[in-house]
Length: 309
Image 1: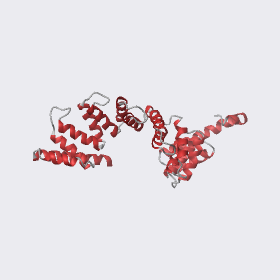
Image 2: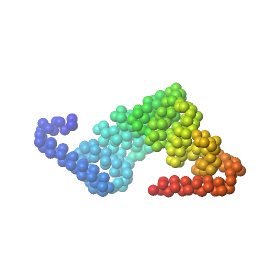
Image 3: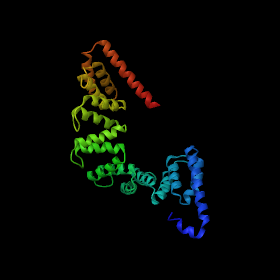
């Protein structure tokens, strides 16, 4: 409103009509965008963007960035994003930062990426906060700084960013930028796992199986390993095999399920499972091996089918 205030003194009611028109035209562009009529959206957004409408500028950047209704053009996308970013739009600032990071529409520039991520992060933009954690943690455009990485991961994690929650768990587990704290690591792994991060679910399973940061509980370990395994986490699949092999968290040893999960892990690249499978074959009945083999094949087939949907 600060930019239109001087016009009010001169145009009075006319300014109000202009603002209503801009709003209506933006809504028309948004409706076309959501209907996937990108050519019409471009037509509606362009005059508003050229007139300084921050929302239209961002959508113009999005259209050119993704080649929607127009030939993909990173240079043009960057130009529109930057207009909106300079007006304070956090999503546009994130987009400008990312294009600087990857060298899209301009030369790669980690320093500018950090600056723009910083502007968006200061507004609470979670992905920007997370990316700042990555950049400081890995030394992209700045000397590696675990403390600064922790600061930004924590901000993003508290805002609900699952990947940041997982990375915080790793930092507390390994003592990177903070003192080692298994209980804190467990807490963040749980929060990330509850959002479906398979690697975090596997870490929760490991914590329950080993009693690190939480009381040992093999039943809960199996539950968390199963969630991770069903999302394709190979270590979790192997850990499940070990629980069944040793009868942990269950009434007795279950070689059929042990074989099944080691076979699944092996099919997904776990070479160490090869020797375990060979050993199990020496102890199991032929019909049990067949049952386990078929169960593993069916599980893998169903997982691949679900990923194609």
